[in-house]
Length: 491
Ligand SMILES: Cc1cc2nc3c(=O)[nH]c(=O)nc-3n(C[C@H](O)[C@H](O)[C@H](O)COP(=O)(O)OP(=O)(O)OC[C@H]3O[C@@H](n4cnc5c(N)ncnc54)[C@H](O)[C@@H]3O)c2cc1C
Image (cartoon, rainbow, N blue to C red; front, side):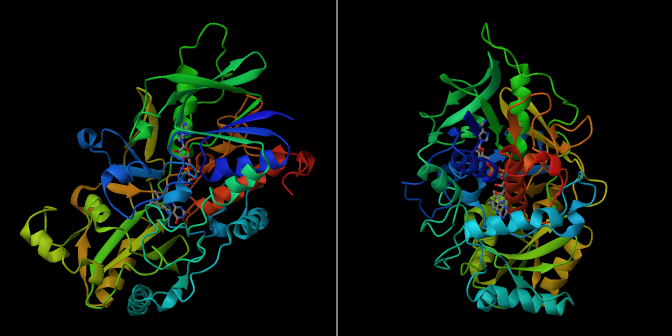
């Protein structure tokens, strides 16, 4: 049996923790954020609180004005703490061009396994909430297919609409509630929160992970890049920091100034490291509609219209504060302050219908983000970015069909987009340039090191990605742990 260091506790990291501990290995889990299992989470949109749970990139966006901003979850449970709990299987078309062995049919049993563990179900009465009803009326008016309820990881939901940034009532079945709880039960899991992995090195036959301690830090743990350091040692390492931080950690490891006697990771293909990250076409179209939407009721996103390459999801429950930060505004109101702005936002909760667009990025915009490490902090820079073809027109037709008024978005005001669904950066594949192997997600030429998270996806899942990340993790762990014999791959 081996001692496994897992870096990051989101979907990939938590599944790895469960699977390795249940197979008899000991696991040390490093997470730079906080442990929320014993903490009460307030229902506030105060940035001092939000940035204890959210990582934002790039750190210098005010100065550099990138084309794309990214937010991701942080803390024990990773993105599952802050997410809207939506678990959609990727459509068959999403897997075109993926390596052999990665099709919808191959993943279906693993999707089912994840659904069973997280208790995925639709919200009771999902289509009866005013927001879902108005959304359905809008779809009908625009000649779109009728919305269907989202499969969600919620249990005993109070329908208060405040799933993001965290469920204060503990009704989201996060990775901390489920996969990590299973790992804890084995007695073989050690959790170390407030530890940001700085680099990975070799020491003799083993791996060493050196971390910055974030104990004395109040928020923005992802920006820590100096201060006291500690290291842990293991036989294997799982990198599970997500699409932005996993490539950054590997890159930082290759560049690290190592103490005497420590060896760097063996060289591996880096041409695509931190490149080709896909923002899953994220876009938010808002509109002020005459109908009563009563936004803060139900789950954050309860239903979706399936349009093949993309989905439209009804979205609300995002606290007004967060919306202000996203700068979604009524038409004609150019500054997010002042009397006119206040007046227009008075009825915000009752009449604002949000439509989230998630799917295939507009043509020619793949690989819109690149990640390069600056002073230990992940940076992203965007070139062209466009929502899925036809998606904005479809969302707008819904709002217009309801007799509503379109809201401006930052993308239109400044061509700045915002994604919470980045994937890629450590692409899996069978070719020489892929960062990790397509069979077991092993880091090329570094036996015992695996990358298990959203960074390995070769392209967008065309849907909210957590379900696909989880299914990929389960399948790769079957191979790593010998449950799925390698000689039978890809069957
Ligand atoms: C507001 C919001 C809502 C969302 N809603 C949905 C949804 O409903 N459905 C869906 O499918 N997706 C949703 N997403 C996206 C989803 O959260 C991500 O796709 C998913 O969490 C990615 O999983 P992962 O395992 O790759 O990494 P993550 O879940 O991001 O986990 C990575 C973890 O590693 C930690 N970490 C990073 N670097 C280090 C380091 N150097 N050392 C130690 N720890 C580190 C991070 O703090 C984090 O906890 C949402 C995202 C946001 C922000």
